[in-house]
Image 1: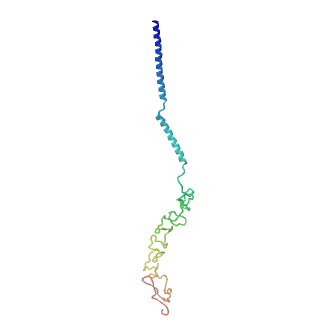
Image 2 (image 1 turned 120 degrees about the horizontal axis):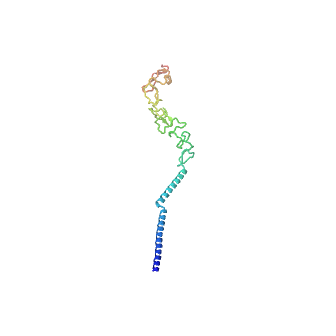
Image 3 (image 1 turned 60 degrees about the vertical axis):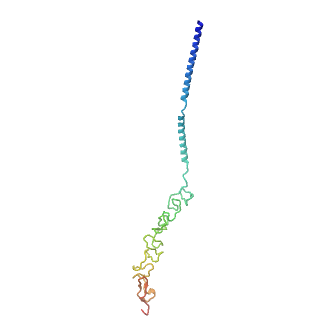
Amino acid sequence: MRRCGLIAALLGACGGDSGTGGSDGSTSAGTSSSSTSGSTTDPADSSATGGTGSSEGSEAVSDASSSTDPLPGPLCGDGTMDLGEECDDDNLVDHDGCTNACALPVCGDGILQDGEACDDGNADVTDACITCVFAFCGDGWLGPGEECDPAIDDGCTDACDIVVCGDGVAEGDEECDGDDLLGNDCLAFEFDDGILACADDCTIDVSACCSAPIC
Protein backbone atom coordinates (compact mmCIF):
# COMPACT_ATOMS: atom_id res chain seq x y z
CA MET A 1 0.00 0.00 0.00
CA ARG A 2 2.82 2.37 0.85
CA ARG A 3 4.56 1.42 -2.43
CA CYS A 4 1.54 2.30 -4.54
CA GLY A 5 1.28 5.73 -2.88
CA LEU A 6 4.93 6.42 -3.56
CA ILE A 7 4.58 5.52 -7.23
CA ALA A 8 1.52 7.71 -7.56
CA ALA A 9 3.39 10.56 -5.97
CA LEU A 10 6.30 10.12 -8.32
CA LEU A 11 4.06 9.98 -11.38
CA GLY A 12 2.30 13.17 -10.29
CA ALA A 13 5.59 14.91 -9.90
CA CYS A 14 6.73 13.82 -13.35
CA GLY A 15 3.47 14.93 -14.95
CA GLY A 16 3.72 18.39 -13.36
CA ASP A 17 7.20 18.96 -14.74
CA SER A 18 6.10 17.98 -18.24
CA GLY A 19 3.09 20.28 -18.12
CA THR A 20 5.13 23.19 -16.86
CA GLY A 21 7.82 22.52 -19.34
CA GLY A 22 5.25 22.38 -22.13
CA SER A 23 3.66 25.60 -21.00
CA ASP A 24 6.98 27.34 -20.67
CA GLY A 25 8.03 26.07 -24.07
CA SER A 26 4.83 27.25 -25.68
CA THR A 27 5.11 30.67 -24.08
CA SER A 28 8.73 31.01 -25.07
CA ALA A 29 7.98 30.08 -28.63
CA GLY A 30 5.14 32.62 -28.82
CA THR A 31 7.27 35.31 -27.36
CA SER A 32 10.04 34.57 -29.81
CA SER A 33 7.64 34.63 -32.75
CA SER A 34 6.13 37.92 -31.61
CA SER A 35 9.54 39.48 -31.14
CA THR A 36 10.65 38.35 -34.57
CA SER A 37 7.45 39.63 -36.17
CA GLY A 38 7.80 43.03 -34.47
CA SER A 39 11.35 43.51 -35.67
CA THR A 40 10.55 42.70 -39.33
CA THR A 41 10.73 45.81 -41.55
CA ASP A 42 7.67 46.52 -43.70
CA PRO A 43 8.71 46.19 -47.42
CA ALA A 44 6.41 49.07 -48.32
CA ASP A 45 8.10 51.34 -45.77
CA SER A 46 11.51 50.29 -47.02
CA SER A 47 10.51 51.00 -50.63
CA ALA A 48 9.19 54.45 -49.73
CA THR A 49 12.36 55.33 -47.86
CA GLY A 50 14.52 54.11 -50.71
CA GLY A 51 12.39 56.03 -53.24
CA THR A 52 12.85 59.30 -51.39
CA GLY A 53 16.58 58.85 -51.30
CA SER A 54 16.68 58.12 -55.03
CA SER A 55 14.67 61.25 -55.88
CA GLU A 56 16.91 63.50 -53.81
CA GLY A 57 19.94 61.98 -55.45
CA SER A 58 18.54 62.61 -58.95
CA GLU A 59 17.82 66.26 -58.10
CA ALA A 60 21.34 66.72 -56.84
CA VAL A 61 22.78 65.26 -60.05
CA SER A 62 20.48 67.46 -62.15
CA ASP A 63 21.50 70.61 -60.26
CA ALA A 64 25.16 69.80 -60.62
CA SER A 65 24.75 69.14 -64.35
CA SER A 66 22.81 72.36 -65.02
CA SER A 67 25.39 74.48 -63.24
CA THR A 68 28.15 73.29 -65.54
CA ASP A 69 26.27 73.29 -68.87
CA PRO A 70 27.91 75.62 -71.48
CA LEU A 71 25.96 78.53 -72.96
CA PRO A 72 23.95 77.42 -76.02
CA GLY A 73 25.62 77.83 -79.42
CA PRO A 74 27.75 80.64 -80.82
CA LEU A 75 26.76 84.11 -79.64
CA CYS A 76 26.93 87.29 -81.71
CA GLY A 77 28.88 89.81 -79.71
CA ASP A 78 31.10 87.39 -77.84
CA GLY A 79 34.20 88.52 -79.71
CA THR A 80 34.64 85.24 -81.57
CA MET A 81 33.71 85.07 -85.24
CA ASP A 82 31.69 81.88 -85.57
CA LEU A 83 30.35 80.09 -88.61
CA GLY A 84 27.77 82.27 -90.37
CA GLU A 85 29.03 85.53 -88.86
CA GLU A 86 30.62 88.18 -91.10
CA CYS A 87 32.13 89.97 -88.11
CA ASP A 88 32.04 89.96 -84.31
CA ASP A 89 33.45 93.01 -82.55
CA ASP A 90 32.63 91.92 -79.00
CA ASN A 91 29.80 94.41 -78.48
CA LEU A 92 26.17 95.05 -79.35
CA VAL A 93 26.52 98.40 -81.13
CA ASP A 94 24.86 98.66 -84.55
CA HIS A 95 26.75 101.67 -85.86
CA ASP A 96 30.43 100.79 -85.51
CA GLY A 97 31.08 98.76 -88.65
CA CYS A 98 29.59 95.48 -87.36
CA THR A 99 25.87 95.22 -86.68
CA ASN A 100 24.18 93.45 -83.79
CA ALA A 101 23.46 90.60 -86.21
CA CYS A 102 27.23 90.16 -86.72
CA ALA A 103 26.91 91.31 -90.32
CA LEU A 104 28.85 93.96 -92.18
CA PRO A 105 26.79 97.12 -92.77
CA VAL A 106 25.22 97.49 -96.22
CA CYS A 107 22.85 100.01 -97.73
CA GLY A 108 19.35 98.67 -97.32
CA ASP A 109 19.84 96.84 -94.03
CA GLY A 110 17.67 99.38 -92.23
CA ILE A 111 20.51 100.67 -90.04
CA LEU A 112 21.70 104.24 -90.60
CA GLN A 113 25.49 104.09 -90.88
CA ASP A 114 28.10 106.80 -91.38
CA GLY A 115 27.97 108.15 -94.93
CA GLU A 116 24.29 107.26 -95.40
CA ALA A 117 21.70 110.01 -95.61
CA CYS A 118 18.90 107.50 -95.06
CA ASP A 119 18.33 103.74 -94.91
CA ASP A 120 14.75 102.54 -95.10
CA GLY A 121 15.60 98.85 -95.21
CA ASN A 122 14.51 98.23 -98.80
CA ALA A 123 15.69 98.50 -102.40
CA ASP A 124 12.63 100.44 -103.63
CA VAL A 125 13.80 103.21 -106.01
CA THR A 126 10.42 104.92 -106.13
CA ASP A 127 10.24 105.98 -102.47
CA ALA A 128 11.88 108.87 -100.61
CA CYS A 129 15.15 107.03 -99.92
CA ILE A 130 17.07 105.67 -102.90
CA THR A 131 20.39 103.86 -102.49
CA CYS A 132 20.70 105.45 -99.04
CA VAL A 133 20.35 109.05 -100.28
CA PHE A 134 17.18 111.14 -100.28
CA ALA A 135 15.38 111.21 -103.61
CA PHE A 136 15.78 114.42 -105.65
CA CYS A 137 14.72 115.66 -109.04
CA GLY A 138 17.37 114.61 -111.53
CA ASP A 139 18.58 111.53 -109.63
CA GLY A 140 17.56 109.31 -112.52
CA TRP A 141 14.60 107.72 -110.72
CA LEU A 142 10.93 108.63 -110.72
CA GLY A 143 10.39 109.55 -107.07
CA PRO A 144 7.34 110.61 -105.07
CA GLY A 145 5.53 113.61 -106.60
CA GLU A 146 7.64 113.57 -109.78
CA GLU A 147 5.98 113.45 -113.20
CA CYS A 148 9.28 112.74 -114.88
CA ASP A 149 13.01 113.03 -114.32
CA PRO A 150 15.21 115.15 -116.58
CA ALA A 151 18.03 112.64 -116.23
CA ILE A 152 15.99 110.09 -118.14
CA ASP A 153 13.25 112.10 -119.91
CA ASP A 154 13.94 114.74 -122.55
CA GLY A 155 10.62 116.48 -122.10
CA CYS A 156 11.02 117.03 -118.37
CA THR A 157 11.55 120.25 -116.47
CA ASP A 158 14.11 120.84 -113.76
CA ALA A 159 11.24 120.55 -111.32
CA CYS A 160 10.46 117.04 -112.61
CA ASP A 161 7.31 118.24 -114.37
CA ILE A 162 6.38 117.29 -117.89
CA VAL A 163 7.16 120.15 -120.26
CA VAL A 164 4.05 121.86 -121.56
CA CYS A 165 4.49 124.12 -124.55
CA GLY A 166 2.47 127.28 -124.11
CA ASP A 167 2.79 127.67 -120.39
CA GLY A 168 5.10 130.63 -120.92
CA VAL A 169 8.15 128.94 -119.45
CA ALA A 170 10.84 127.62 -121.74
CA GLU A 171 12.12 124.41 -120.21
CA GLY A 172 13.20 120.94 -121.11
CA ASP A 173 13.86 120.70 -124.84
CA GLU A 174 11.86 123.84 -125.66
CA GLU A 175 13.73 126.56 -127.62
CA CYS A 176 11.32 129.13 -126.29
CA ASP A 177 7.84 129.45 -124.87
CA GLY A 178 5.73 132.55 -125.49
CA ASP A 179 7.78 135.57 -124.53
CA ASP A 180 10.42 133.40 -122.89
CA LEU A 181 13.20 133.37 -125.46
CA LEU A 182 15.81 132.17 -122.98
CA GLY A 183 17.55 135.55 -123.32
CA ASN A 184 18.11 135.26 -127.07
CA ASP A 185 17.59 137.82 -129.85
CA CYS A 186 18.23 138.00 -133.59
CA LEU A 187 21.92 138.71 -133.04
CA ALA A 188 22.27 135.32 -131.32
CA PHE A 189 21.26 133.73 -134.58
CA GLU A 190 23.74 135.80 -136.67
CA PHE A 191 21.31 138.46 -137.83
CA ASP A 192 22.04 142.14 -137.62
CA ASP A 193 18.66 143.21 -136.38
CA GLY A 194 15.03 142.32 -136.26
CA ILE A 195 12.57 140.80 -133.85
CA LEU A 196 13.05 137.25 -132.62
CA ALA A 197 9.83 135.39 -132.00
CA CYS A 198 8.62 132.03 -130.66
CA ALA A 199 6.46 129.75 -132.76
CA ASP A 200 3.43 127.91 -131.45
CA ASP A 201 5.45 124.70 -131.21
CA CYS A 202 7.96 126.42 -128.92
CA THR A 203 10.68 126.70 -131.53
CA ILE A 204 12.53 129.91 -132.45
CA ASP A 205 11.01 131.99 -135.26
CA VAL A 206 13.60 134.16 -137.07
CA SER A 207 11.31 135.31 -139.84
CA ALA A 208 11.29 138.86 -138.47
CA CYS A 209 15.08 139.02 -138.18
CA CYS A 210 17.15 140.73 -140.88
CA SER A 211 20.68 141.46 -141.90
CA ALA A 212 22.21 144.48 -143.69
CA PRO A 213 21.70 145.91 -146.12
CA ILE A 214 18.05 144.80 -145.94
CA CYS A 215 17.48 145.95 -142.37
